[in-house]
Amino acid sequence: MEEIKNVKGTHDIIGEEANAFAIIESMLKQVAEFFAYTEVRPPVLEHSELFVRGVGESSDVVRKEMYTFLDKGDRSLTLRPEFTAGIMRLIVQNKLYVDREMPLKLYYCGPVFRYERPQLGRYRQFNQFGVESVGQANYLNDAEVIAMAYTMLVTIGLENVTLKINTLGDNQSRENYKTALKDFFKDKVADMCDDCKQRYELNPLRILDCKVPQDQEIVKNAPKMSDYLTPESRAKFASLCEMLDDMKIPYEIDDTLVRGLDYYSDAVFEFHYKSSKGNDYGAIGAGGHYDKLVREVGGPDLPGVGFSFGVERLVSVLKDDDLLPDVSNRLDVYMMPMGEDAQKYCLNLANSLRMQGIYVDMCFDSAKMGAQIKRAAKKNAKVAVIVGDNELENGTVVIKNLVTTEQIVVPVEEMIEKVADILEGFEHEHECCCGDDDCCCGEHHHDHDHECKCKDKKGE
Image (cartoon, rainbow, N blue to C red):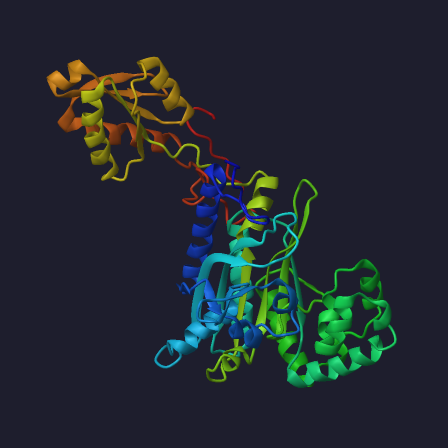
């Protein structure tokens, strides 16, 4: 039969890449929890109307990229193209705003779906990690969210990230600006791409986000948002920039940054990155402030701010820069049974070790000792536990340190204690000697001015 392959624009995440996803997502979640955020998990399927009302009819996401279909009840459903609208629906439906302190601080992680051209680090099914802070209009809340996103990128090891920010102003500012853009583009739009012709009618702000080179040249001479801000919007953006300066978060103001979703207002931002190999990933994460989104999905008038990262893009960037976390040394023990009876015995012993938090694998076939030693080495196991006929008869096990090649025979009752002692010795060999508890053994420095000088005792 013909081989069935994955759908175009999707990809299988396996092996070291799957481990990298798990570790990176775990690090992002931990930072979010440091900022007092809690996790939510909205469904993948939502009513299509949610995204039309929430994301906006003029956005490319709604017009061209959504996976939408009719179910058996003739209802229009959509695989979520982004999380934010679904999070707002979750907040409203579950009335989270009734008895909780504001702002609501929520984070999420999972797959999203967009029918767009697959490209570097971008797929039609991809994973997003993001946050939403809802119920507080203070610019300090916007600053904290930007600071959290920046902290996450530093935590996973990225340096020289470019933060671009802009303001779309309040409703009056945007209406003033849209009028100016319509006037500017009215004699030019006929020569622009078909998308820009539609954007001109639906929302001229979208033209600023056009990726067609000849249209980008026209956009360069367009009016700037900063010239149409109300005094209140100008003061709010200035206060946000001052706060970022106080927190020593570097940024650049980009007058053309509008983001691709219609619900944004006031501050918007993107994190750009170019890898050490020269691959320009563009925006690896982005977000912004919104005022009316909760109301658009049937809730009260609550403002919010949020951002999201494409996890695939983060993994690609870290791989390019050789920054992927090393998980090759995770296996602690490899069980080596010699014979069928020993296999059954070892399976029980392996489970006993696992119950103590020890990573264990074992051989399930009749491989000889030499072959099993090679397997253990390939898996980077630190310790082997060997059981043959003699051990079964005597109630003992052989414990072999696979690094020093030393081995001991101990009663099976002492196995867990002896294995733990050997593994603790590995930990001590890699203890940090510079006085920084968080600097060694695969952990990234949060203070980049501090260079870790420690080596393990073998000088490796």
